[in-house]
Amino acid sequence: MVSNAVFLISFELLFLVSFVEPKLKRPHSVEWEHQETLFAKLIHKDIYNPRLRPYATRDAVRVNSSMFIYSISSIDEVRTEYSMQILFRQTWMDERLKFPPNSSVSKIVGDNWYAERIWMPSIHAVNDKELGSFTSGGAAGTMLVHIHSDGQVLLTKRIKLRAYCEMQFYRYPMDKQQCSLEIESSILPNTALELAWSENRPLELNHKFLITGFILTNFTLENIIYSHRDTGNFSRIVVRFNFEREFGHFILDIYIPTVLFVVTSWLSFYIEIPAAPARVTLSMTTMLTLVTSERAIREKLPKVSYVHALDIWNVVCTGFVFASLVEYALVNYIYHKDKRKRKKNTGMKRAESTATFCSMDSDTGSNFRVFAKKIRVSHPVILWVQVR
Image (cartoon, rainbow, N blue to C red):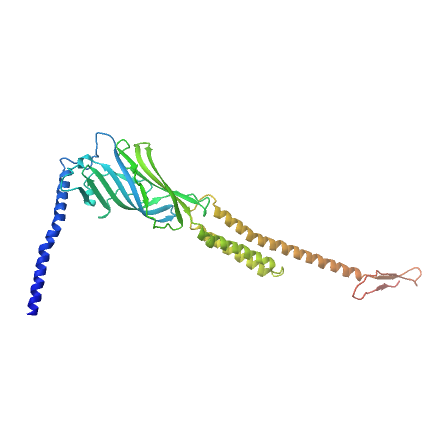
């Protein structure tokens, strides 16, 4: 009996859920069906051509743009590029997509499928290394389009790009870099398409992200007209990011070690001059370590033809270490030169102290002539006597 009652209750609950659930989903389904029906009417091939821009016979279409930056993940000095993820928004008016505001649909909201069936401004990033971050439709869910009753279209794209950044390393590692993102019309000239930054919050930043090794100090926005020699003038919007390099870790990684290498080379001054192997080994080891560390630092930078600030620092440090080697060579030469001079003087004194000559006069045969030079010495004097 109990099992039958449980079965009946479960069956009733399933029946109620199956009966109520369609009613709960029905309003949303009806609105969605109305939106699809309305959108299909607006883009019918007899009245809408997505390849033609709005106001085809009138003034240029103004496209207002804004950007939300999720992250600037890395700035690569060797490849002179930076990577970023952004949410790019574009707004323009398309009078062909107007619909009655009192209809059952307040606005049309869709994804990539909707966006690919209406006219969109053809743009590209001038300094994009991947060539297609802005033009390609991307995976499903990367685009969102809003069509309002007055014909205003809001297109939102999520984009990941790698952009080229021209860098200058004259003051490295105390340098400041400026990287830009330049977005330009691909097909239509400025007389047909005008790109401009939105007046209301054109650029927003996610303040939670961090850039490894850099600090974003500020940015500037520009609307410009770029002239191509053969194809004409095209509208372009530019955002310039100003970065300042974080200097703290360079003190620990570069400056403190190199200072210690130089100070270590100076310790050879306190080693006795005759201990040549110890002094030379200390100086040469310090020199090789310093040169190796400088080479490792240099590999982290692109090969540039000019001298930057870190090169000057490394040359000065290497010069100090090399000077310690030159100092030892001079001191060693002076020390041995003085030693040889003292030894030579001692030998001359010994030779002078041993010369005493005696002789006999040949005329008398009985007289002796003795020649002696008295010098205070500690060794015995040998007398040479010649008898004639």
